[in-house]
Amino acid sequence: MTMTVTNVNRRDFLLMRTGRESDAVILSCEQLYMRYVDARAEGTTAELFTRLTQDLESVKRVRLIKTSWLSDDDLRRQLDAVFESFRGGGGRIEH
Image 1 (cartoon, helix red, strand yellow):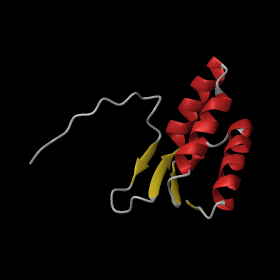
Image 2 (image 1 turned 135 degrees about the vertical axis):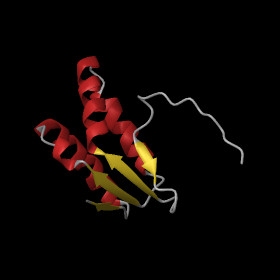
Image 3 (image 1 turned 60 degrees about the vertical axis):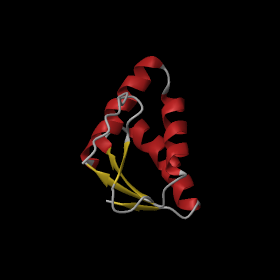
């Protein structure tokens, strides 16, 4: 068995591939919220949601976990815009 070690920058890691299907990912709303708080403090929320939109272009399904973290109105509004675009391209959101 060969193991490959890869360094992952926590700011670059948001979507987790399910492993079984390469076109499906898991999005932790807890991790998204933490990234959102960091981005808001740095004034980079637009970049965060642009990157998420780009990352979702390569998948067909997103499963949301820990959705209780989506209580911030601005976060929900921006995420809804990302998901509207994702669904417009044929993507599915699962809770």
